[in-house]
Image (cartoon, helix red, strand yellow):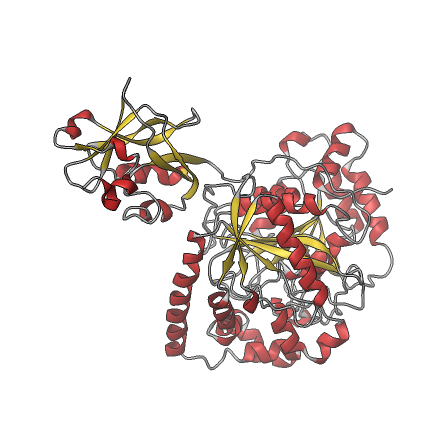
Length: 597
């Protein structure tokens, strides 16, 4: 059978009765029969165990299980009960009694685990060659690297063996393999997916990531797997995202300045990135040049700072006892963490804090950033001959991400002339997972074409609202306007400006007696249109925003020039006793400029 494994297609087949989970399992067993020439798997569930998972779904309500009968693969540093967890080091292996929290949530939602996939040992590397189980080969050309460390997880999906897979992403491991295998790779907001049951690389930075054929599929999986886990000290729930730039008709996207773009001599990837910039502009994006240097300075901290000591700490007992069992490039990196002092650690933490302040300011001007996922791709033999330098090149656009607490989605962006895939990454502040995936879906639809190395058909885009997205709009007319003194009360609540407009011509406008705030009153006649901005913020922050408003001002319903009604600043009549009317100036900025003096 030629069954497409995207989730929407499988659900349609299940709902129509054309396919059962057991029938799909038999199809997948046939696909996985024979030699694993791409070195995808470290271990797989036995045939009977897979059939048991499928039979367990018989008679259950498809509608109640969002991942009913959906097969998935698991990176072998994430626990699946009953199968060894090796982290690509046989001597390190243990067999867990319980599955990782994220894995169990997927199984509870009806998903069928297939087995454990190959990786760069101890999740240290971005290339997929650092494994005693063999270098995991690219799904499109086995002479080339698959990307790492979540190599097997990506190739399993790209080769049509799983609908989605779990990886981990500390330095780019959930994005680089997606780019090299023409997949969507979502690195969620840090803490969104529990890391309980995951062998740590850098525990304070680790994220469980998702590979999928489509952005819609990734959103479905994320909605199931995400959630607060009290057993994970780094867990935090996804918050409402506010402005959904991914579905907006217009948005601002950052692009690194030309001086900061690096393609490592690959003219094809440079061409494809230029086409991706044009594609996102066609979707309504306005490009904004971004100084990428602070992001690159942050990236250098990951392997040039104390976070290497965290990799050493994660496996210290094993590493000190059996260093000869660790792959040479991995051993070299981890051993560098032994001698890092506490003083140097704090010095680097201070540096990171300063860099983050600089990088955070970028989001005042843009909604999302666009970069290549990796500037180029290498052959397996090239990588094995020069493992440290070439691996560093692969992390050029990825290593800063978790240090700066950002979310990111890697999206297919076409093919080089030699047939190898290229991908771009969409980046945003934390909790913007929904907008990222929505924009990724639009980018993927605009690109069209094949989803993986096997012949899949891109499903029709669905309008999904699976992630926290509640938001509220508020019109501001005074000191909360952009660049004015109280605007920070909006931006610090993750608010985004969505319109610069006017009220309906039914308002009178006053400067209150304190000279710092205006008052807006609706009238039956003699009114005017008053300049205002409309901002959108997560509903969870709206209460604290309103609580900070001092009398005689408050929040009520405000009519805009287009007739729409939004929340907005209004004034009690008693507050106008000593106020000066400034209606004729049409707005607070005009009056501040001295036109009313």
